[in-house]
Image 1 (cartoon, rainbow, N blue to C red):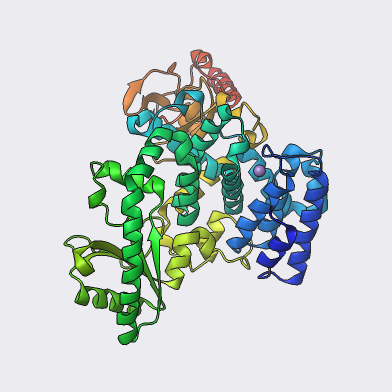
Image 2 (cartoon, rainbow, N blue to C red):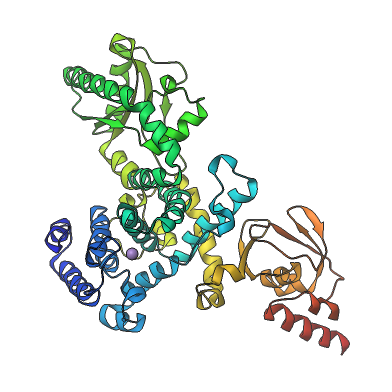
Length: 497
Ligand code: MN
């Protein structure tokens, strides 16, 4: 049971006014959810409090914490978006609205039972499209983070959910939510989401792995505890002050890694790793020197993610050494700031005092975001633009939305949202009227197709423009969208004149 007092403690980084707003949101949520219970039997407000606590731990701004408390208010109570807006303003109601909409992203049953080992290119693309759709629809990064916090609590309380529903929830968490957390650099959240889903999606494999690692894990933990003290003393003597933690690898990520290593546990050196957190980048390299002076590193195992960060912004130095007694151990070295980033990712960059959660805004205004490292986030900004231009899509967003719409790409990776059954003609007009009017041919996934070809989600569509091409009345047979039909009609009329 969490309480509002606990949340109050967590939001002490906010000013008095902001705290008052959150208090108001809490009482509003409590009153409106009051007779509702979660599947676990707990009062519903426990769920809202938990999501808000996760957001407060990330130190996001006051609208985020308030919106987390209110995130289910429009979906599960009589409160309408308009009422919420009147009570809490546009910013908070927009965030809540965004969170509500994201609930509608579902994987189709066709893909639900595909095992990750049997991944097909088709499946990969579908899942990737879902992830991007998720991000693109959110418009505001705060919506995504709240949705992740919401999912975290849903996973923590999944035992209350009927067994038949558990698999879908866990699978979606594993293939959509956790990868998004990862790409936003939120390593800790990703690990939690994966480890909560793992036993449900792969129960047999999970049990086997648990058995397999049990002994090794406890041995290794003992070893690391001893080594921690030794290293602490060595650093101290050289004038480096830092913290050292042992960190045990998350189960799911261990399982995935084992698959790449022929299931050979003895070749996994970071089952338990040591993490050294120092103050400056100079100290990171100095620490690496001290470690290597004392213990020989393994060839090819030194990774300098400070000089060359991972695409999600992750920075650290990793090395693997022959520790005392010849035991092989991985050591990760980073500054406090890098550690914050590795755990909280984009949320760490995005201090609560900075207003507006748009990804564009983050890229433009927040100089602390290492721009070149957030390639994926940039790509998303383009997706968001494409969707924002398509007001029709936002307004027609209903429960069955995704069963009636497809998402296809332009050759440059822009996404176009079309009805099921749409053809290259619809696509061409969706890109540009002029392109539609001069459609000479079409390629789908690099193969020529004719105009009656029905596009599928994930297709890459290229229109071959011909100067002398012009709309024919028989194009109306292929055009599904009203936009294309209207353009074809007016253009053929013009040509007759
Ligand atoms: Mn919820």
